Length: 166
Image (cartoon, rainbow, N blue to C red; front, side):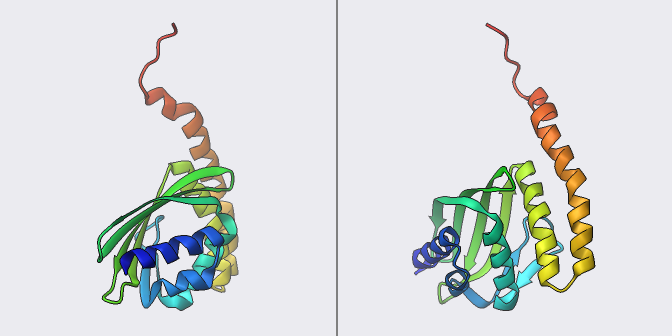
C-alpha cells in the first residue's frame, strides 16, 4: 500500500495533476515548508493551492529515489525552478490507510531553495488573499536571490579543495 501511495504522489508531480496528488494525502494531512518551521499547510483546502503553485513553477521534474517502509517513505526528485536546479527530499509519514498524513520537505542547493522562495512565496500569498504580502515577498526575495547566486558562483568555490594547475 505504501509504494502505491508514493507511486501516485510521484506520477501526480511528474504530470502536474493536482487532483491525483491530493488523492495520495489524508484529508487532514500536514505539509511542512522547506523554507521555515513557521509555515505549514494543513488539509486538502490548503494543499490544493500549494500544489497548483508548485506545479506551475517546477520544470523537468524527475524522481530518482523512493525508499522506506509501510509507515515512512522518503522520495527524492530533481527539477528546475527559475533557472536553478533543485533537489527536493520529502519525508512522508503514512497513516493506517497508507495515505500521506505528514510531509516534511527539504530542498538543496541554496540557490534553488531561494529561487523556490522567490517563485512560490508571492503566488501562495496571492492565492491566500494577501496581495500586499505577495508584493512584499516578490520584492524582498530578489536581493537575497542575487546574493546567493553570486556567492554560489564566486565565494563558495573558494572553500573547496585546492586544485593545482598541471
